[in-house]
Image (spheres, rainbow, N blue to C red):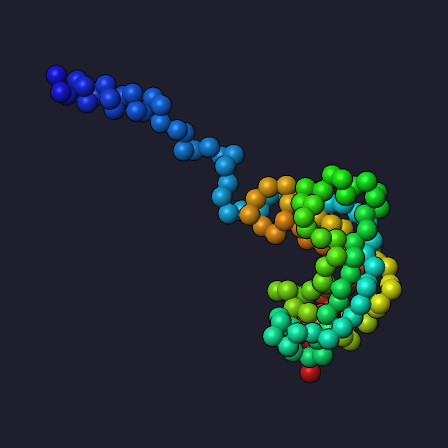
Length: 146
């Protein structure tokens, strides 16, 4: 009789056990981003905090503000707590080299195409900004080159 009770108990547990093979649940991965097109105005170029993540050669802090093409898009932000005012960084979050920054036309008052990308789900950075017209392939030489 105890065996029968044990078998019934195990059978009942297996019947109600959760399905651990659910492919819809992903932990620790990025989900897709949704893009909002707009422009960014460079508000300032100023001295860096020496303790920040900086290019070793002539770093500068670049502050910008994003403005969506459709101003009502702000009402639909997935992450409204994430400010439209941010710092432009390169590589692993470094403040860029001043020469590269100016060479790309990133000077106070300049306006550039910009995309605010918002994470729809997942564990990555909720909002990232992209500058499609800026050549980010050249920042490394100005940061680490001779």
